[in-house]
Length: 200
Image (cartoon, rainbow, N blue to C red; front, side):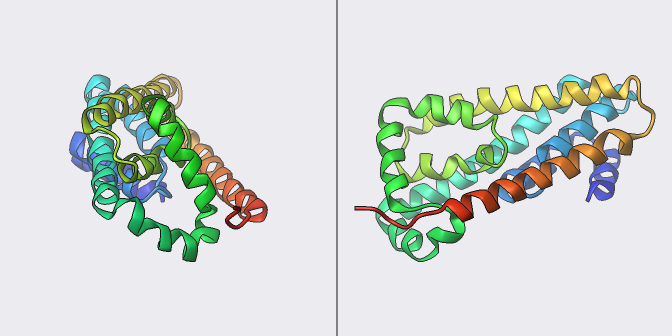
């Protein structure tokens, strides 16, 4: 996975970073930890500017965030219920959790979106409940952008700092990619084991 990410960023620069971050948001198994670290290393090598890397990563991720928000808003909460009832086990969600989320979004939606952007896997999916529960677009965009920019900056700067001292990109990215994929897999299996059906 890391080889083609490295090549795309080297060939396409900022556009490659933005495109990959858009894909990461739409298809979470492509980890932003890898994309932004590679981009940060590229900036350290003088191929790009670190501020441009962060801006491109944030813009790409926000396009993906808006895609999921809009899709979920069009579907609406009422149409979503049969989907959860049928496939909830594989999503490790039940309707009781959706109802709890609806109450939380009513009072703390901005905080959920902001902090959710900094949590593995959840940062890509938090747009869905925001859209389903009709969160105000301006609130969604503002807090999503702030959280996303913070996350991409953290990863990009980490890659930039590491790239100043490590010559081989794979020496940085390889262990990160492996760790992220393992954590996502373990987290999903844990939730699947502990998943419970709808409760009254």
